[in-house]
Length: 306
Image 1 (tube, helix red, strand yellow):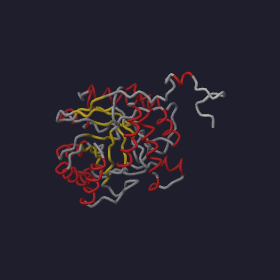
Image 2 (cartoon, one colour):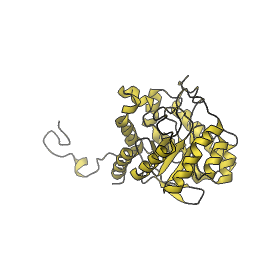
Image 3 (cartoon, helix red, strand yellow):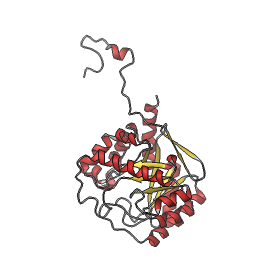
Image 4 (cartoon, helix red, strand yellow):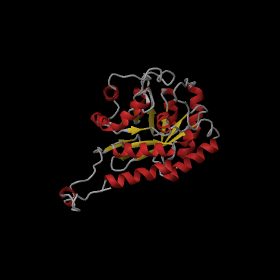
């Protein structure tokens, strides 16, 4: 292997001058404002959002955290491991999953959100597409809405305005029950950027503040394996929306397909995606394995900021 030396053993001029260096995709700095007025800076350091599912049908950890004590212990570990946000969900959104009743979803998430906010110094997001569940979650102390339907519930945007709550708007074609039935697109990235731009415009028009919106291209939601890889390879395209970018790819099926691994053996693939997404400009990484993900993105941040 020749490395950076020339055929005669000399060092190329570009390297000698220090002008030959790998550059990460530029990442805009944003501030996410919560209802209490506090701001979370996004851009200089990658934020890790821990996944805490309390439904029995989740594709990765379904049924493991149904006991309140177990779920709270998991939240403690995530916080200790460096999660700045914990994403609490009571409704599976795996491919083929059917919706659950709003009352059941509320009973699953509200007590846990209350317990987390009572004990831990961490921001909590609620992963729901139902405005009635979101309202109860915010009353329990939730700080952020993570909505896979991009505020598809007609009551959601007015609720966000009323409560001055921030939101993650995600791209998904169809619903979790139907989204993988057809994953063909004419131009996937154009569709994702166009959809998210229109939902951001709608939120702004409704009165949601500009510094309370995050976008998510929806890895695994109505996309093929190849489509997911294409989105990750072109995260920079999402910068045109001028909003913070969240990537949630942890343990997902496309990682299993690429590596031919079951869901409980996808840590390394998930970390590779987290590292690549952070280097490509993602602001928030949603992850099951918080400690390992935090270490990876801290290293990426150090390289980016050097």
